[in-house]
Length: 184
Ligand SMILES: Cc1cc2nc3c(=O)[nH]c(=O)nc-3n(C[C@H](O)[C@H](O)[C@H](O)COP(=O)(O)O)c2cc1C
Image 1 (cartoon, rainbow, N blue to C red):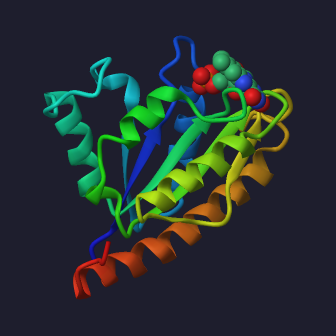
Image 2 (image 1 turned 90 degrees about the vertical axis):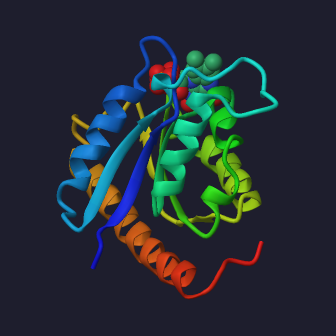
């Protein structure tokens, strides 16, 4: 069977971001699941325009291409003012059909919160895009629970649960898309 292709989207582009190390930790967890192929899609690598252009730029086409090639996604997102970062919304809105009938999971983090508000709002956005968000989230409070610290075992279990659900939905949806065109 062709391995499920997962794109890990790094949603913070902030200078000095924690997102780098959270995404790195999560990618390490995926290595226990050797039936998954993982690509990192780091939004800070894309030179997106300040205004939504009339025609897609090369950077937009490159990002949309990555979304189109993936079977499932893990969005690594911080919480900013009870939501998720603006550059992440900008990027999500560049694709549409490419998100459809695909599974989406979340690794969220914050300071004092575990990024719950960001995930709640992302679920709404991905529902509008006909994507299927999986139930379990890896939520990290950076003030008390860096993945490398004392809660490492718990977070490892959370990552496994997320990946198990993402695999189930990702394969089911890939089979479904192959069997018949999605109705949007
Ligand atoms: C503009 C801004 C707003 C924030 N709002 C929240 C918040 O609502 N809840 C929270 O738990 N942490 C909040 N934080 C803390 C961030 O989640 C924390 O700084 C995290 O490291 C940000 O991710 P990043 O470093 O990858 O950009 C905020 C940080 C920034 C910069």
